[in-house]
Image 1 (tube, helix red, strand yellow):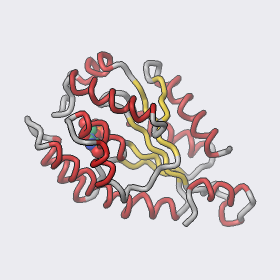
Image 2: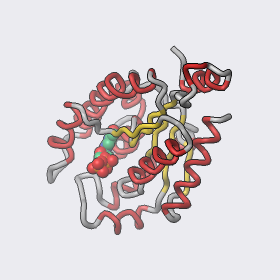
Image 3: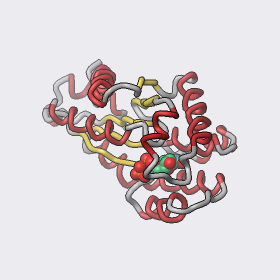
Image 4: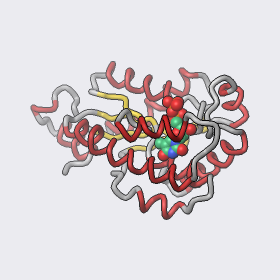
Length: 217
Ligand code: TYD
């Protein structure tokens, strides 16, 4: 199967089927709760569409049945369920999301902008004490994205934004630990880091620059 960037080459080589800039690429945006990644993912989709790319927004937990179960059974409650149960449910949802949404969209040549992916499992369930190697193994069906960005915002800054809408994951200590795992993934070059401590406009410009650089390389 063609990867997203093989499809870019096909498009650049003048494939007549690809004139609507249907190039197929899988881009993930990551970060701690309240870092602004949902806003940024949606702005990125708009910016790409404005430039004629066929981009779509998608998210994990997904809108499918397992994703809905996670929102009800894992996220909307007072206490956390065991971390291994969280990891297994998120991995199951990911299989469903990739199979039912991401792969079909890529086949149509769309640019899929995904709000959270396997890196969230590594960061959140890893911060809860699970072995990162095991989390990777149970996510072996999760295809590698073409680009994965980490929007880095100081935990103190996000906690004040989150005051109203707190979930089981959002204590200061937890978010610091989650950020540490994200930084480890940056060091391993699995994620590209971006300074999120700036205005929405500035952050969106930086994201667009990196994404266009990748798409049009
Ligand atoms: P979030 O993007 O905050 O959803 P929303 O803003 O729509 O409520 O994600 C929900 C929570 O799920 C977030 O606290 C991180 C957590 N999460 C994990 O712990 N592991 C995962 O694999 C994923 C995808 C999310």
